[in-house]
Length: 539
Image 1: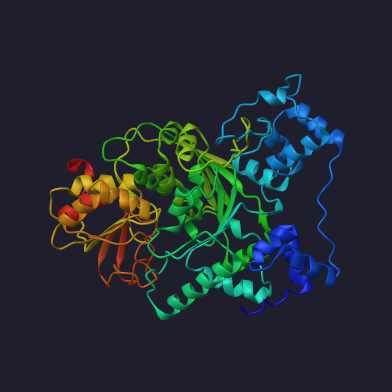
Image 2 (image 1 turned 45 degrees about the vertical axis):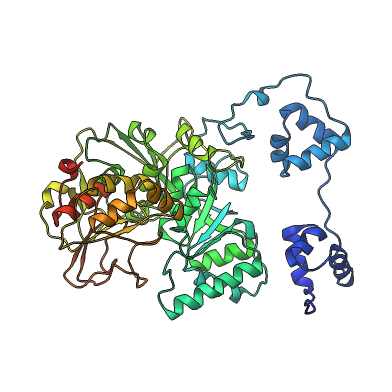
């Protein structure tokens, strides 16, 4: 075995900041012992990491106050097990004799979770609550600049740019490999020499850094995987180098897009300055009429609000319509926020979110809820009881009209699935319409399941068979045809109706092509007719 290169003093100090003990550093480096790490430290005059010391009085006061290892650990910034060891050291093994108010708080989160008591009359929105929690403040205000550490740092195939910036910084180790997620969904299978080289570098980088969450070709769309695998949880903060990062708001998380250079800084230091955004409140009430789905609702809202936002405003969705939506529908709402010129979007945590996460994670989390007297920069309220199916016409997400107004417009291609509408519920709606029928021979139909799990579920339930028998082409799980030379690009003068989240010029190929955005039901109905069609008669 080749001899390992001895880390420099700066590298050892950085490793010690990240992993604390010699045992963890040895595990991180691989093929070395803790004794060897200790020897290197002594030779380079690096003292052993000293853990914080807590007095008997501190441990006793917290234990009598909360009576729960997890919550006491949160107060001290240590783990549940670490607090248990501290109270065992001081002999506090019995439950507190008296029940205190803090021990009566309700558990709204995941299994084994206890939620720190929060005030609900501090004029703070949900988004402000999340950011205030991250910096340890009681409140933050719009326009305030804070430095935050994210719970998740996600980069898709474009992470090659992040890697270039990170290498320019000159560090050998990332801040926290367990909080970094890489996804090679863009441009996969490798569609060019440059893409192949970039993906190779990312795979090698992930192995060197012990980044265990790297999703390669065929796993699916990065944002779907983050939600599906519960990499982000309610009340947490996420950064991503993709405009659809706002999708994670469907779980009650605060997720924003950052540049590759900013992400490289996060990889290196774990910190990034962030300006607290203003918050817009959008209330949607009513029941969705036949033929109307979540995509129609968010397109309607985009048409009313426009897409010329200042780029530093958050939407928080409320109302009876939203509370009845599944996580799949909420994903569709929040993923289009960036197309509306918003920084991100959030749907508050509730019982639907909790049930969704129960099947996916045992990790504890602390949801954030807006104060009852929260102050919003602006509020909008919509009723959708009489809403018709909606469609976004070229070349803007907010160029929205009822489908009936453009019915009969000839099409050349239909894309179902991908980023905003690629979940099982979306595919099922389209498959039910196409089942037993034939797609118009003048139309090309491409289906993109959102992830491998969705693909397998659709295969198991016969959805993919319905697509193929109708004449569609089912692609591997992943992203829409776009700027990555993927199949399905449009020629000049062609028209496409897609369930994706972008219809700007050249979003699917030629600048002379036109892209319409609509729901999976409208897309499937239009595929049968060969032109844009109102889906109501096909359901």
